[in-house]
Image (tube, rainbow, N blue to C red; front, side, top):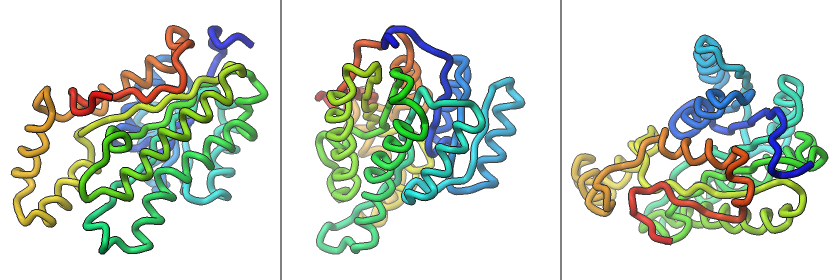
Length: 263
C-alpha cells in the first residue's frame, strides 16, 4: 500500500487522559480517526471516553500500564478488538524525574527509563505485530519526546536520558521502516503547560529554595516567545504528521518549544 494513501485508521494514544495526550486524542478524533486511549487510572479513562463520546467522537479506551509487557499486550489487543488494526500510534506516556544526580535513587532512574523509553519500545513492537501495522503496510508512529532529549536538562539526567533515547529509537526505526509505508517521527515539546509542568516547577522550587512563581519566571525568560507552549499546539503538529501531506516526513525530531531549542 502506498504511504501517500490514508486508509481508515485507528489511533492508539498512550497517556491520553490529560495534558498533551488528551489534546492529541481530541485532535485526532476531530480529524475523523477512531481513537483508543489508555492510562493507569480506569476511572479517569472512563470519564474521558464518556466526555469525548458526548462530543460526537468515536473513542474507546482501557486501563493500562505501559511499563509492563503483559499490560501493553492487553491494551493493544483491546484497541484492535474495539476498532480494528492500529494505523496511528502516539507514544505519549511520560513522567518527569531528576534531582542532583549523585543522589538519584535506582528506583527513580529505572522508573523514568521504564515509563518514558522502554514503554515506547514495548508499545511500538506490539502495534507493529498484534496491532497489525506491519501487515497493513501503512502507518504513522509519533513519539512525544522533548527538547530536553536534545540539549539536556540540568537536574534532569533521567528525563533527558530517556527522551534522548526516544529520539534515537525514532530515527533508527524510521530508517528501518522507510520502505514499508510507515513513517516514524518524534515531536519534541519544550515547556508546555500541563499537570506535569506544575510538578516540575514544584520540584525546582524545592531544589532552588524559591517559589514556584520565581521558577516560572526563570523558565519563561529562557523561551524566546516568553511563554509556555500549549498542549493544543503540540497536538497540532501530531495532527499534521498523521496526514497525507506529511507522507515524506520521517526520521525527524521536530520541536514545539517557542524557540527554546534550535536543533
